[in-house]
Image (cartoon, rainbow, N blue to C red):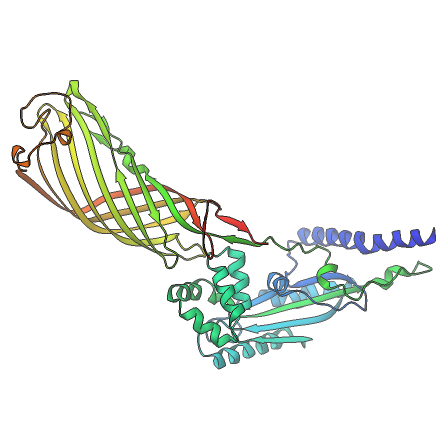
Length: 458
């Protein structure tokens, strides 16, 4: 009976008190409009437990100072250090918490010579030690912070995460890792721009403990000691739950339609929407894509001598300039070429039919709509367009019979058809694009295809 009672008391001490403390701390913090620094790990602690956390937990919960490139002097924004010394450290010590361990890491981003990066990392670590006024129990110098790079890419769902992880895991040292990454110029430039600035850091994790023995003072026979294999990760009063590891697949094919083309209105005809569909192909490597567009309006009112048909074929190449992990969002630029034929009749005496072609440049911006396969695409095309045309001909172009067919439906020797007598040349905008795009198919790594953008990796 006593053993059951002691076990019950032990469970209350082990699980309930941390939760109560957490709630009280949260309420006090909220009332005082302060936020507990993320770098402090609070835990109820038995003396035989060795304090340690995994690398991923360290990157998640540690405080960091981000330094400018090639610098190690303290940045101006260090208010969290002042608040820690003036408020949090005294408060925690007054509540019976003991600072039991100090873990520091200095790091540099991988660009630049390895020896210089190691010097930068060491100097950044020393800067942090000087300003916090605490001697570390563990201090690590990371000359080129590839673990930090992988952590950030994984959290961002970066499409190249598996590629970089494989390079880091299979390279014998950091210098080989750098050379292999630099052999992929597009990948290297992107991670240099997106991730490297936040790798130039000094990080701090402080471990505060409160011995369990003080809660056993009223117990005649203490419960069994905690297993020595328990770590701080298990003892943290907000249990650490490992994230599911998602891989974001790269788009392979996307379909889209330009909504702006559906808003066309013509005199004497009214609303003349231009249905269109585009298919965009995403190669395995790089930020270039190919897009084919087919525009196909076909409306006619023979009794009013009104006809509207266009067949336009456009091929475009795009280069995306992403600012985040998604390769195919952000600003883009490209070039296009188009050919078309058309027949537009706006009445018995007004209309045109002809053939044209054009080339030009395009620019725009694409953004993913939430965490899905939908994207918003805004852009504009401008360039050169030339067409040869004649007044619109109703009926058979050879006999003049009004038989309800469209000009391009007639087949016969070319010498029976009149040559085009008019020409128009245009320099300027040729299309406004307000499109909705959907990623229809995704490319798996290293091979295969799927309809799913995200997949859980076991």
